Structure formats: structure tokens, C-alpha cells
Amino acid sequence: MNLILFGPPGVGKGTQAEHLRDNYALHHISTGDILRAAVKAGTPLGTEAKRYMDSGALVPDEVIIGLVEEVLEKDKQENKGFLLDGFPRTEEQAKALDNIFHKLQIADVIIISLDAPEEELVERLIKRGQESGRSDDTEETIRRRLVVYHDQTSPVLGYYKKGRKVKEINGLGKVEEITDRIKNAVGS
Ligand code: AMP
Image 1 (cartoon, rainbow, N blue to C red):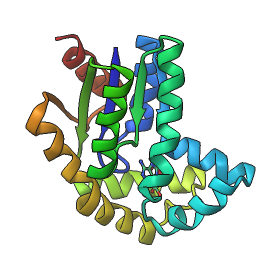
Image 2 (image 1 turned 30 degrees about the vertical axis):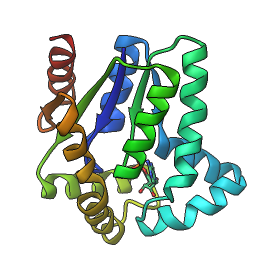
Image 3 (image 1 turned 120 degrees about the vertical axis):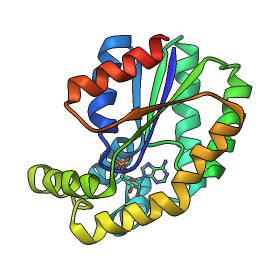
Image 4 (image 1 turned 90 degrees about the vertical axis):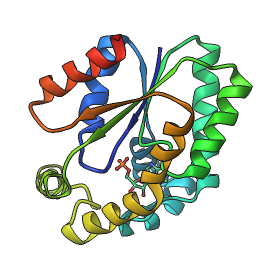
């Protein structure tokens, strides 16, 4: 099984991804985590990505697409199912991902769209910023990331809805309740 976890910042993709990874033995691929690791390690990718991330903008498509392709190719070779978290975030990325799926002959992908009201997202992200110290979880950057989400990322959902079934999940409630909703949707 392969999953794409889609949704705005703060909706709980990372938290749900950890549960789903354990439950279905999937390789959790978080592009945000990959980029943060690169920033921490001070690699050329990290240096380039940091300025975008700190301002709440998206890292350029050509940077992120190649990176995801490499990981998916390796998973395919090792016969591992994947769980994509935070990718695709633009229509360009979604189209590139379709090409990668075609090339690697991956057909069984379930798209899960998590959603919650905007004020709830802002509240959660501010709280996360206070707890984790993530440098892009300041109120100003949070608002900008939500604008970027509406402008550049939410059209991806429209793209997917044209040709595929999208499982829409309410992201409000207890973590376990949301995990159960996703498991029910995936199992059906
Ligand atoms: P996340 O942890 O998924 O919230 O990602 C944190 C930041 O990493 C985002 O605000 C972007 O700057 C960058 N990022 C993560 N995934 C992507 C992606 N698929 N495309 C472009 N930028 C990304």
C-alpha cells in the first residue's frame, strides 16, 4: 500500500503519519523533515532550502522533485510501501509525481486529505512553535504558510479529484479518533 497524506500546515499530517507508518509498516517520507535535516547538516540543499523555509515560502519544485524521485526509486527497489507527507505541494509537483509513478509502475496509491478550520490550524501551529521551537512556527510565518497553502497547494486537491478518489477526513478531534477515521477510509 502507498499513501499520500495531504492537508494544510498544522492539520496533523506528521502526527498521523507516524501512526500510519507503524500501523501499515510504511516508509514515512516527509519532505519537511528531509529539508530540516539538510539545514541542520549544513548541506548545499539545506543552505538553499533554509531561506525559503524561514520565510514560509515553498522550496523550488526542481529542488524537491528530484529528491522525492530518488527516495521513491529506492523504496520501489526494496519493495517498500510509502507514505508521502508534505509532497506534492504544487500542481507541478503532482504532475511530476504522476510521471514518477508511471516510470516506476506504481499504481496503488491512496490519497488522504485532512482538513480543519483555519483558526484551529493557527492555534495548533503557535502551540507547536512554543513547544518545539521550529523556526517557521512564528505567527507571521504561519499566516504566510497558510496563504501559500491556499494559493499554491490547495489546487493540488482539485487536480487529484479530477482523476482519482480522494478520501476526505475531518482533522478535528483526538489524535486516535482521526487515526481511526483514516484507517476506516483506507480499509474500505
Ligand atoms: P512541513 O514540515 O511539511 O510543514 O514543511 C516545512 C517547510 O519545508 C515548508 O514551509 C516549505 O518551505 C518546505 N517544504 C516542505 N515540503 C515541500 C514541498 N513539497 N515543496 C516545497 N517546499 C516544501
